[in-house]
Every structure is written in structure tokens, then in C-alpha cells.
Length: 384
Image (cartoon, rainbow, N blue to C red; front, side, top):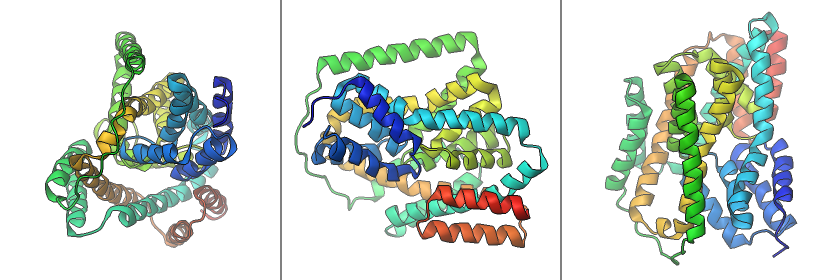
């Protein structure tokens, strides 16, 4: 193992990595190169455990892995600085894009630009649905949960209830999933527990102050925190939940504006969940953007801190694996619902159909999402 890095080095290393963090979960490969090959902060087995953990808990897998590496290397301060460093470039760029969008989104060329990008957003969500299908749909039980989830959403049932129900159904129906081997019991140091308690007190105090100062911002933060806690399976899992809360239920955004926010999230580095920054900026300006960004990342960070010492025991739980199977399967239905809902809002014509199919084919052939979005934006400006 290399000499333990300074906190400044950890922050700057993940800040540099965050500048080019396009590709979502694919960034885990680059985090591995940074932490194992280049710096030797972790060994292969520890990193592999981290990947398994971060895929099993809510939140963006790449963001969680950045925090995990920091936690294992420099404890809680390392986790915080790695997390912030990796996400800061995406937040900064999304702030700039959101401000420009708010000022110019009604101009003709901007309307043409996002008119084409909306079709590409649908292609991106269809591709994400396809990836979920390949990963989790194995038999008739998976298909049943997927179809039922989509139908329930179209009937107006809250996606949070759908996810909770899928977890319970998974425990019952996936009886073929047997108990995994339990390797060891990790002890949890009192210092680690005290750090988490202190952070929780700071979070609770901050929320109380926010509630006292601005109840509207407090509600916005609470909704984003709830979304984050249910976003199993990576950043894309947050999109149906945001759609439900800010388009279907609470208002403030329509389908078109929300789709534009997703498009902006694809041309910034970092996870698609950074769309929360756009939502906050649209609803409450700069302060709203800061509050929603902190809220959308904080709960999953606490989950990572709390579960890391117990992950071996968690992996051995048959009920955990069955519930996770149900949750991941239901996100196929949720993403399918979002794709259909967005598709129904687009004024389809021959040009949009061609752009949509071309974008989907490129994504299925593993072309980088950033290139697909940029090419689509250029074509949209020319012909729409």
C-alpha cells in the first residue's frame, strides 16, 4: 500500500476525475484505476466489496464509490472530500446551464435545440430500460412485477409505494435465492459511530433551521431526500420519482421542461441525478439549486457510512437479496412508464422519428451518451 494520501490530494484527485466523469456507472472503472493502479490506496478485494455495496444501496454508484474510496483511505473526512470533489464539476456546470436555460429557453433556436433533444432523452431512457431488462429480468416473476409496476403508475399509484411493495413481493416470490456465505463480522468502532451521530445532528439542525427560515425550501429538500432514499439501481432510478413529485403531483415543471433538464444532465459530467440541481434552480433559483443538490446526495451518503461496517452480514441475508431483486425489477416498469409518458408529449414527425431511432441505435451500439447528445443537438439546430 502507498503512503496514506493527504486530504488535499484526495479532494483534488477526485475533482480532476469529476471534470471528465461522463458515462455514469462506467466511471467506476476510472475510480478503480485512480485508487488501485495509480495510487494503490486500496487492494482489489476491498474495491470489489465497495462495488457490491454501492450497487446494493440507493444513490449514484459512481458517487458512492468515490465516497467509499475516501472512507476506506482517510476515514470520514476522506469520504466527504472525495464525494464533494467528484460531484463539484457536475454541480458547477449544471448551475451555469440552468441559468442560461432560464434566460434563453424561449428563443427560437433554443426551442429547436431542445425539441430535438427531447427525442434523444426518450432514446436514452429506453436504452436505460433495456440495460435494466438485460441485468434483472430472468423469468415470468420478473416480467409480472415489471408490468404490474408500470400499470400501477399509469393508474396514479405513487412510485414510492410501488417500490416498497416490490421489495415485499420479492421476499415472498424469489425463494430460489438462497443465503449467501457470511465471511466475517466487522467490528464497528465507537469513533466511527460518534462521527455518524455528529453528522446526523448537524443534518437535523440544518433541516430545522431551513424549516424555520423557509418552509418551501424545507419541503423541497425533504422531497429530494425521499427520492434519493428510494433510488436503488443508480441515478436513472431517480427519474421516475422526480417525474412523479415535480411534474405529476406538486407541479412547478411540465414534461417538456423536465425532459430539458434531463438533457442538460447528460451534457454535464457526473450522474444523471444532477438533474435535481436543474429542478431546484427552476423552482427557487440559486438557493434552491444548492438545497436540492445537497438533499439529493446526502441520504445515500449516510447509508454508505452506516452500512459499510456491516456489509458482510448484509450480503449473507437471504431477505436482503430477495428484496433487492424485487426493487431492481420494478425499476424496469418505472422507466418504461417514464419513456411512454415522455413519448406521448412529443409532437412526432418523420424527422423526430429518424433522430430518435438513430440515437437509440447509437446507444445500443455503446456510443458514448455525450456524443449522442451533442450530435443530436447539432442536427436539431440545423433541421428542426
